[in-house]
View 1 (spheres, rainbow over the protein chains, first blue to last red):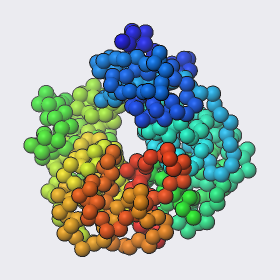
View 2 (cartoon, chains in turn orange, cyan):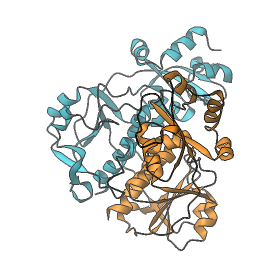
View 3 (cartoon, chains in turn brown, red):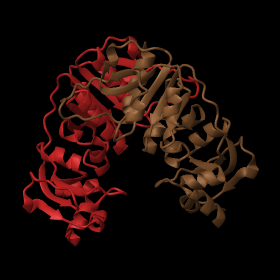
View 4 (cartoon, chains in turn brown, green):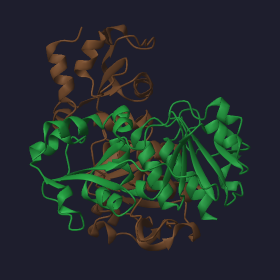
Length: 241
Length: 241
């Protein structure tokens, strides 16, 4: 059974301020929950209708009905389980290799997809501006499909972080060098900009290598790529060589 | 003002069966609406709170309040306009160049993003299995950001379509050839599979060039790329050479 207080707590965790206050977040679905359990994440409770978790301390498992799960889920069509985890302590940023930085990404689906891309391309550091959507937003956690456990996501003053680094800084702009014809290094910072406004002018000043993804469609009309698909193309270019 | 019958009609258009019955669909937001108006799409009505459309026949414009827009919008945070269009007649598939085919894509956001990618990479034909989500689903229309006006999307028996073509057929699989090291032609069919199950076994039999996008992360754990980001990487590889 799920108590009234638990419903209040968990639905509250959809909001950033309550995640901060309680230092908790939740994840849904067996795959994501299992990946978090097998990583460093500390499990508080696990609510389940039918999913079975033999590795989990039975004291932490609470069997609930589907209608109870609906009351705590953030999904329109809930899975069969939901788990509440403690937010881990932030880890230090390891400033080697390729680092992806996000300048004010607002859409949870985009952040989740970018975390999954970093994981695929073996990039372990994702550094976000403080305005970027929170990694523990339930929609982000869901979109990562578990990759959240393998990418170190940090929130910093991005302008300060980038201007203090010794690594080369790459950003994509309309007038940049054709990414397909540029030799790309194994180390560096890749900046991805906001969905509507791109890279902000303060951050643009820290970029010392301007790149462009060439367009092949009607150049007058086609406006831009979605930030997650642009990230996919850029990471593929950095890694393919 | 928006009448009760209009509210009933437009909210009905969120469902495929009513879009089919009325041969109508709707789009929201000035950018998308304008791109559709400037293309071949026939406008039925345009509801607006503050957006101005000087090119549109004023008889078709209906000024409404924000609370009225909320009643007909499919968005949680509505824009300032919504337009109802007639569904155009299906166009013949032009079987030259690169053609993207979708084997049962279910997520509207993924289909919309893939249409936008086709537009960016100058691919004008997108051929979908009959089970693929409907292009006139409001979430698809929204995610295309207007690219829907420039890519010809057809729904066919995909197995029949592919087996009758003379073009080479490409699909991505775990055991395929490294896409970064394969010479890719200017003509051919690229098959993208379902979000959960990948390419179906019937369609897999029609593929004569098996490709793979190499993974750089932990090979045991990282499972797959989202289908839209995989499409981005594949199209980028076909077009970059």
